[in-house]
Each structure stands twice: as structure tokens, then as C-alpha cells.
Length: 413
Ligand code: C5P
Image (cartoon, rainbow, N blue to C red):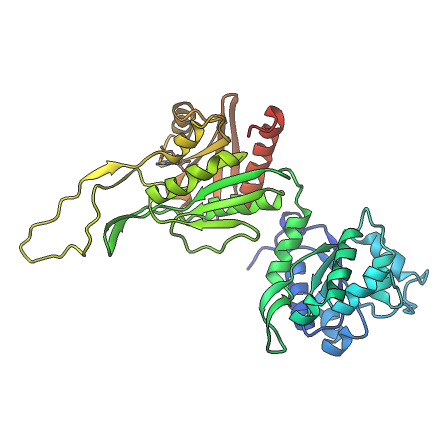
């Protein structure tokens, strides 16, 4: 038996959205989008233009939202007959997906001759943001009229989600396709996060490093990179510009995060050190290998049957975090301590040894590869335990802690 998750723990729990569909083949993705939004905890009122109803039926959207779909400004079901006013006053945001070239033109001109555009124009601009997910052929997207209209709706306060680029339903390839349902859901989740790190630049390391022994072998560790990737996502959602230097991991890059892939500790060091002076915050979540083989063989070391085993000599890798912390001035540096025991003592020892303002301790074996974790935040003033939760929730809490400390000290970089 599965236990229902209380709405408040869902990323869109408690949010009420209007999902508008204008006419476009991307309407087929809107059903999936609606499903994703409701799974994420939102309640969703669907509004469809006449053209949208040619691509997908209101029946589908009613069944998935659990609410009758509004398709006409003459719909008499609202007691005051003012659905265009009521719907936007109740909504935390209006998302139009797909937003066709024609729909964007209507909004740019302030036309309101059907329900969805009427609703958008009648919304209280301050309390009910308008998010548009454009969907159209690449020539339509590139057309000067569309460029003008997009510039106008942006100037009037609307936000654009996408469009993406790639294969289009017409067979052409280019800009203009609607973002996928999960991408739009994540954009919405990010939109509602407080912008605690707006204007800040974060550099994050994540994952293990891989130290080659020969072309087919190497030593590494069990870090999955999930905690670092979650911090990158949380920081981006909080408005930061994020660069993520990742060791070898099989994880998708969080949206709008710049990613640099490396393999070894030396490569990570070479990627991080020249960049670090331009950042406000450095978060070292990577499980950097402490040692690497002194030499990596050019060819595979062969087992020759003699029973003689190769001997590996190791040398120490440079400490990336300590090197960044020694910059003058350093970014605000956050270290991680993945320990197998005595987390608080080891984390505090790292705080002092590496001259860090904040260290985050966790039990490595208990969290490697998992989606949840528990953290212990250690600084000069004391400790704060963040109990077991999913890594994204913990990352958001850590972002709050970092933002609070930046606020206290002013921008360090
Ligand atoms: O020294 P130790 O590995 O215990 O410290 C862990 C912290 O230092 C982590 O934040 C890790 O990313 C960082 N680190 C580093 N470069 C190394 C070793 C650790 O940046 N060579």
C-alpha cells in the first residue's frame, strides 16, 4: 500500500495555476504537462482557445485536472458571469502552453476577444504573473513580427519559458518547439522559489574523480554526484548563475546550469582555479581522490602469468577547496566532509584546517548513490543538523544558509 504524500511536501503543493492552451500541435504535450503539474501538487484550472480544441479535447483536460475546462467568455456557469476576472484572481500564475505566434501577437496588442487572451489582459499584473511557453515553426519564431511581439510581451512583464530547439512536427529543425512537460514543470517549480541568490555567481564541484592507472583502469570512489547536482539546481532556482564542474557521473545537467566535465583531480583543479576568482561562492561537494598513481601507463598493464603483481606508487592530489580558500579575496567557501564516523569532529577539523566559513558534514556510506541524506552544518558559531530529507530539499535549505551568510557579510567577491 502506498502512503499518500501530504501536499505541503510537494514542490507545487498549495499552488493554484491557470493552464491556458492556444492552438498548436504542441497541445498534445499539454496533457502530459497537466499531469506533471498536478503530480507536483498544483491545482490546475484549464482554459482553452477554440483553436486549441481542434488539437486536443477539453474532455481529456477535464479528466486530468478534475475541473471543467473553460473555453468561452460566454460560459454562464460562474454566478457573476465573470470567469475572466475570477480565474486570474484565484491563480498564483497563468501558464500558456502552447503559446502560439497568434496568441503572443494578441497579448502584445492587448486584444481580448476570446476567453484566454481576455483572462491574461484582465489579470492583476503584480500578483498573477503570465508565463508563456512558445510553440511554433522555426520560421514563425524567427519572423520579425514575432520578434517584435515577443519583445513587447516581455516589456509588459510576461516571462518566456523556452522555446526549445530541435525536431519540429512539420519536419523542419530549429528554434520554436515547446519545452517538454517535465522541463516546463521544473521551470514552474524554479519560478516559485525565493530568489535568495539573485545576482550571485556560484561555482560547484560534484561527483568523484577518476585517477587513471592505465588506459582501461583507474581508482575512483562511490560518490554519485547527486548532492552537488542538487545544490547546483537549488542555487539556480534561487536566481544564481551556476557553473558546475563535474567528475564522471551519469546525471542530467540541471536547467540553465553551465557544466564542465572532467575526469581526474588534476583536471578538476585546472578547471576550477582559473575560474574561482570571478565567483561569489565556491561549494566543494566533489569527492576528490586524495591520491593518484604517480604514473599512468600508456598501454594496458598485462597479466603475464608469472604471478608477479604490479606495484602502484601514489602521489597526493592538490587540495582544490583549500587552494580556492587561499585566494585573496576568496569566494565564500563551503566544504563537504563525507565521513564514516565522528562527523562533527572531522567536519570542524576541516573548517579550521582549510580556513572555511562553513563545512557540511554527512555520513558517506549512508548516502552514496541515494536520493536522501542528512547534513550537519558547522561554522565558527556552532552546529545545525538538517534531518533526513531528499537531497534537493536539503540543497534548498543549504542555499538559504549560504544566502543568509552572504547577507551578513555583504558580497565577499
Ligand atoms: O580533505 P577532505 O577530502 O577530507 O575534505 C573534503 C572537502 O575538500 C570536500 O569539500 C572536497 O570537495 C574538498 N576537496 C578538494 N580537493 C581535494 C580534496 C578534497 O577540493 N583534493
